[in-house]
Image 1 (cartoon, each protein chain N blue to C red):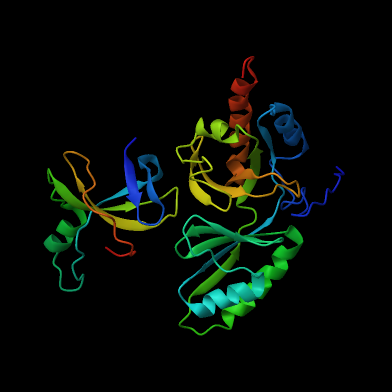
Image 2: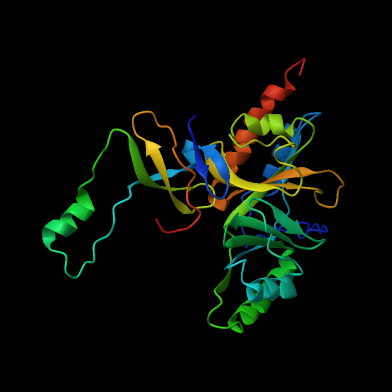
Amino acid sequence: MAKAKEMTPEGNTVEHGGFDPLAADWRDRLSQSGTATIQVDAAPCQAQLTLRGDPADPAFAKAVEAQTGLLPPPVANTLTADEHCRLLWLGPDEWMLLAPPHQGALLLSGLTVAFAALSPATNAMVIDTSETRRALDVWGPDAVQLLERGCALDLHPRAFPIGRCAQGLLAGLPVLIAHLPRRNGANHPCLRIFARTSMVRHLAWWLVDALAEFRRPGK
Amino acid sequence: MERIPCPHCGPRPLAEFSYGGEVVPRPDPEPADDATWGAYLYVRSNPKGPQSERWVHIHGCRRWFTLTRDTATHRILDTPLRKEEA
């Protein structure tokens, strides 16, 4: 089955370990479910590397910065970003590095070598978890209202501005939500929701179902 | 829903957490006899009132912490410690 390869600034949208739970039919279903005030789409597939280490150890932070150009975000539930990569806080000693797919292998080997060269007193590890999660993007003026139907996190921009991320439950699923300034090169902010690859269709179904309410007349 | 103060993420709904039970000091296994070890594994004080207990933010940052909760009122009585060990 030949698929068009759509290159985006963030990455190739169709390569995800050969299996994409949000392939073409799902992308159509999601885009057709959108309303005037809420849009939903599959996020571009990106390399996801899990980094662990002590953020207070300058050797670790320096190695991460040398390889990725980013420092681990100093504040819990925030992210740092440049035009290629993003580094999301997952725990006090754990981060997720998002990178364009074609950079994943290079970053993984670069970080592995850099961490191996650190002194034994420095704890650091990197592992490729690209297949673990698949992401959906939700954007538009009523996007937060939609997610509030199934999420107890306060996603209002005053509590969850651009540059925040948080892990919690959405529609019963453990998710990671990040508030990003741009989506796929388009200049509007979006909420990117990462769920387990095996469960992301449940989330897609839930979003399609929850959107029905916003298409009612008068809404 | 009751909210639990995660030391890293702040107050979050109870559903994001798992309960790890009362904090019980671990005896040195070598000199401990069966009764001491059995008590460590199975005996809990089950107080009505303040109890020091372990929680894990399982659907959030996945870190363990210790807090004091009143078992009768569910009121959280202290700010959890930021360290991993009790």
